[in-house]
Structures are given as C-alpha cells and as structure tokens.
Image 1 (spheres, rainbow, N blue to C red):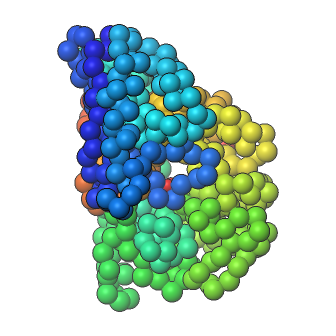
Image 2: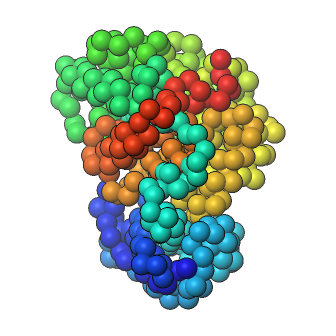
Length: 425
Ligand code: PGA
Ligand code: ZN
C-alpha cells in the first residue's frame, strides 16, 4: 500500500525544469519516475502544467510539484500499488479534466510511472519482468536517429527524424553496433560536405543539407559506407512530423520553398518511399488530415510501416477511429501524451488488436529515466524509439535494453521483422 507520494522539480535534457515523483510503500519499497516533454506536440495530447511567468522561460513546474505533495498524495494514500488501473483511475478522476490540464500531465505521468516502479520494487523483480508477468516477450527493434531536424534543430530540414532500423541484426546488441557504424559514417560524410554543426535535441547530427532529398541521399550513402547493405540489413525510418509543416490546407516545405497540397504531400512521400530504402514513415500528414494519411497508407502501407504519433496521441479511442479510417498501420506510444500507464497500455492493446505494429517512444525532452525500455520489453511492443546514438538521456535507454537482453539470456527473442505484426510484407 502507498504510504507517501512526493514530487520535486529537476532538470531535463534541454536544461528545462521537469517533474520527478517518488512513491514509497508501507513495505518500504520505493519507486521513482521523471516526466519527459515533447517539442512537436499534437493538439490532442494531455497538457503539462507549467508555471509561466519570467522564471525559466515560463517552464517552471512548481505548481505541478505542489499538486503531487498535497492533493495527489492525499488521494493515493493507502492505495494498493499493484492495482495500477485503480491508481490511474483515481488520478484521472482527481484531475477531472479530459486532458489532465488541472493537475498537469507532467505531474500525473511521473506519479503513475513511480507507482508502477514501486510495485515492481515491492515484488523484488525488475520492472520489465513485473510487466511481462511470465509471458514470453521479445527484445524490441530499435529506431535510431542519425540526423535530427524539424522543430528539434531550428527547422534546418523539414523532416524531423532521419533514423535507421536493422531488423536483420539478430539481436538488440548487434542492432546498436550496426547503428554506431552508420552514425560515424554519416558524420564523416557530413564533415566532407562542410563544417559539422553539432547535434540536434535528440542527439542526431545537426542537419547541414540543401534539401530533404540531400539528407536521404547522404543517409543512404552512410549506410553503404559503413559496410552494410541499404534496404537489406539497414533501412531508413522517417518521422516527418508533418503537423509542424501544416495541415489539410497545405504543407510548407521550407527547403523546397514550396507549399504542397495534401495530395502533393502524399505524392512526395510515396516518391521517397520508392526511391530510398525506407521501411517506416511516421506522421506523413497533420494530426487532423486523415485523408492524406490514409492516401499514403493505401498506396505504400503494404510495404512501409505508417506510424501515427500526433494523429493518435496514445489514445485508445483515437487508435480505434484511425483504424476504422485506415490512416496508418502502427501506433507510437508515449505515456505522457495521454498521462497514465493504464491509458497508454489501453492504446497499445488497441493497436495490437488491429494487427498494427507498436513503438514505445521517448520525447525530445528526456532524462536519465529508463522506464520506456522496460515498457517496450515488458509489454512486448516490438519496437522502441528513443532518439539518437549520443547523449546519455538517449544512451541510458539503449544501455538499459542491453541489460534486459542480457538478463533474458537464452530466452531473448529478437523482434526483427515480427515487430511489424504482419502489417507490412
Ligand atoms: P516530441 O517529438 O517529443 O518533440 O513531440 C518526438 C516525435 O515527434 O516523435
Ligand atoms: Zn513523431
């Protein structure tokens, strides 16, 4: 049973304030979790509570932290930490808004995940094993960023994430090794083209390209230069994050100096998928432009994973509606988009039920918190997206997955192509 709940303001990977929650059980078991924060957020996401005003650019979380120590602590006192669904229902009811705006999704998600950690600590097993509860699980296929653009890099490219996936790696450890080789090769190629200008929010090389196609060409060359076969061993995965570019009325591609209609946007993305070794594309259209999303999925969804992020916002009900409209064939899962562990689990279950792939994902603002590595493996999501192959808020998650794979030992089954749940051939 829950004895105490406390919160504190700490700092995230962008040097902004964020919320940490700590839950202590009567048994003495302790769970702790840190809220992440997005930069390219969907309008239908749960809302973080920020102090506003002049301090810390308005990003302070004193009010969110205060809610944890008072209202939330009182409501959760004496609750059974093993009943995550009941705890999360209490949190939702206490907040009372449809989007966690009163207590703040940052406060609610930190507490919800801290309760989960406390329950696992109480059971004296690692979180991934507590979640798996004896079921067979796979080590997830990682999606790893090589170039970061869009809202994470001063909009230097229109596309937000240029990533790689290595489904034939055979295991998680090898997938990271291959990615390291591609990452270094990409850095060398960029250096040859001009001065390297550091890394973007999620640790990928800061883009230095004349066009989105230039970035795709360079990434394909980097894969080949690293000694791996593009389109065989290593594939490209893109997060267009098109919500940042526009909506059904038009998409502004700054690098092309052009505004594309939804139809033109779909055609452009379909053309990229035919020209480059692309296996996965996230958010090819804005959150409410389901026509363009569905057009892309209808055209290439049989061979390319089409992921919904801003369009689904980890909301089971939106997954069901988007499924009926065939707008995508995979769901991105970010616990803080919806606010609680239980609601995120419902979204992933709704996706799996449809035969979709599921990708547990970090945010662009992160921390040393490694909960998502445990969720991706313990829930058997099949895929994990964390950002790049630098910066310890990213590496902490990849490294935790190495520990989980090692602990699984001979039971470790690699997700590989099964990560797509048969939704693509
Ligand atoms: P965000 O970006 O965390 O800034 O929203 C991540 C993503 O779009 O997947
Ligand atoms: Zn995204």
